[in-house]
Amino acid sequence: MPMMPVARTGDLYVCPIVSPAVPPIPHVGGPIIPPGVPTALIGGLPAATMGSMLVCVGPPDTVVMGIQ
Image (cartoon, rainbow, N blue to C red; front, side):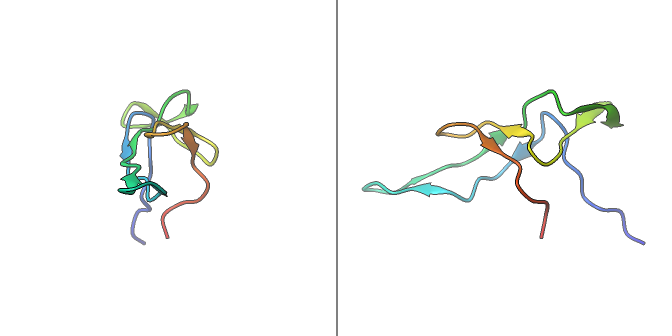
């Protein structure tokens, strides 16, 4: 069985949102910010979960679903 992808605090993500403006402003994404799950370490970093906070161009985002 192949291993499933994971995300950790500090990992970068890509935000698919584009702000409606002229010209449109893409939200490029950024790092996943702590705390994550301190008891679930992946490579020494806490695991990110649904609801983890994400830094973005606008207000912070949250993880709402996994990889499709």
